[in-house]
Image (cartoon, rainbow, N blue to C red; front, side, top):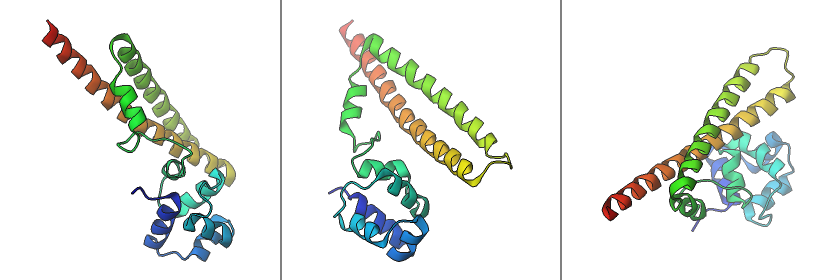
Length: 167
């Protein structure tokens, strides 16, 4: 059975040696809210709350969003995306590959630009935090897109083999 978002947070919190009270203070949320999330009483937490918690427990914000049913990731846990990209053929397959590779290139350029922007000593803490969150989210998108590229390459190989067998 897949771990709930509350179970993920509780496990990670304990692995970091943090009490519920310590984590709630660090993340600037109420003790009650954290207890509700961890117990499963609050099945779908506020995304802003998940972002605050993620900073202190070593779990990517997007993974918490996925566990809460608010996001997606490309993995064996997401059979819809895997099936969709694996079943593309012909021009759709080529177009998806070109688009995904182009997106990766653009996102990598964005991350590079944002990382250089972080070196600006005149940035306020709030601006730095927003840039760091954007970098984290974009790197997650890059990782997901790289998984999609793997699926597309596999689909392309399968299509080529199938075509060779027909000839």
